[in-house]
Amino acid sequence: MPKKKTKRIKKQGKNWKKFWKLGSEDFNTQFFGISPDGELTAIEGHHIYNLNDLAHKYGTPLQVIFPFVLEDRLKDLIGYFQAYIKIYNYKGKFFYHYPMKVNQNKEFVLPLLSEGANLEVTSANELWLVKKLWEGERFNSKIRVVCNGPKTDQYFALIEELRSKGMNIVPIIESADEIERVSKYKGDIGVRVDLNIKADTHWDKKFDRFGLSEKEAFDLPRMKNLKIMHYHMGSQIKTQKSILEAVKHGFSIYKELQKTHPSLDTLDIGGGFGISHEKKKFYTAKAVSSKIIKLLKNLSEKAGIKHPNLIIEWGWYIVDPAQITIYKVISEKHIPKANAKSWYIIDGSFMNDLKDTWAVHQKFHTIPVNNMHSALKTTWLAGSTCDSDDKYTAGGNYILMPKLHEGKDQLVAVLDTGAYQDGLASHHCLLAAPMKIIAQDGAVKIARKRETADSIGKLFGWTNGDHK
Ligand SMILES: *Cc1c(COP(=O)(O)O)cnc(C)c1O
Image (cartoon, rainbow, N blue to C red; front, side, top):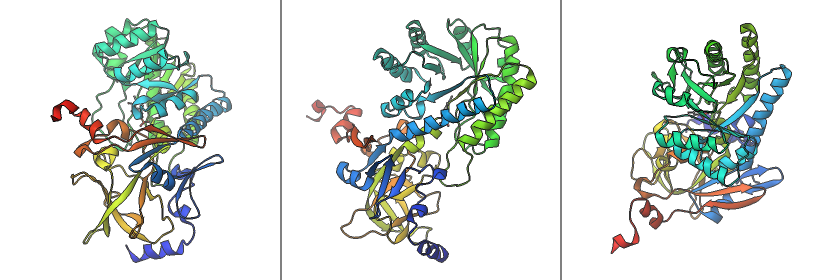
């Protein structure tokens, strides 16, 4: 560790909460704290969960889901938009659609629906889950479902079936070969346009293969049920400017399309709102929602058209902070000559459970669960598969963790693991996925039991008979 750093840590003395970036809205950790004996806590109103105790009770690896965080974030977000709509006297309506692919677990989807979310789905299988909810009467018939992604026959048949049963369901034209089929659809339809501008995102792609090009969109034959124009710029947009430029450009297409398709009244600006795990100065939902409404109002008044209804599909922003993943350190290995002094090997896998550490070198907010007041060491974290890519090094920097002590467990928490990681998870080396628990209303429940050798073996075709 560089000398200066050591001093700074020592000087910081007692402010460990600040040191671990907890209890701070800037880091989306307002509901985390530290107990007097240096253990990580989560606070839901007057309920306190001690995560060290939970990890000892349920074992590791462990995922902890906090539905109250989802509910809070969505309530706030809808509140911002509704407030600015009033303040600016905006005439369009606001709709939040939860993009289901970001986390399809029931424990995420159901709380969001009860907080007022509509849905966005990307595949027949996601839609099939929505159908199950509908059949179980867990679905308010006002909820609207927009359907993105390539429409296979099975997917389109399901869309038709749900519409015939009374669901408010909108297929979005994804490519030119869907135009004819979707335009015959009896309900509202939408079109996705691949905007001819680039957003400043984490994953700058040179070519986008989603949606119609602007030219294809302008060439669409008149459709009397075209209701929504949709675009999606990508995930983790880095600046507020990029979000607003996309709205501005998107509106210029919307305005033109409306001349051919007078039923068009809704602009769907997709997802992409970012969350920073490291930077304090990041754009906020409050400021951006105000700017979007103001911008759309000014643009539509200039163009002399009605204020569009607005759909947003910010997934990451809503669900990422609602889950954490906890591991136990099972051994330590010295690293000669590197930014970190030791590998801490954990009892799970970054590659399996937190795929983005490997796939896109995503950084995560990583902190100890216990001994949070103790002397520190610079570490890199390694997973338990045999893969050299199964590691987390904070981008080659280091992660500060308490020094290990004989006979004392050290637990590590990775915060903000609620978005995307589950759908991408895998079973490299047949390691078990973390057990899932939910903490809500002061009670803790098991959502998914720990996988066993037998249950994982079954995923790979090994049934009892085969072993004989
Ligand atoms: C992935 C996706 C989203 C969600 O993006 P986030 O970056 O999680 O906000 C929204 N809409 C569409 C069409 C998507 O493909």
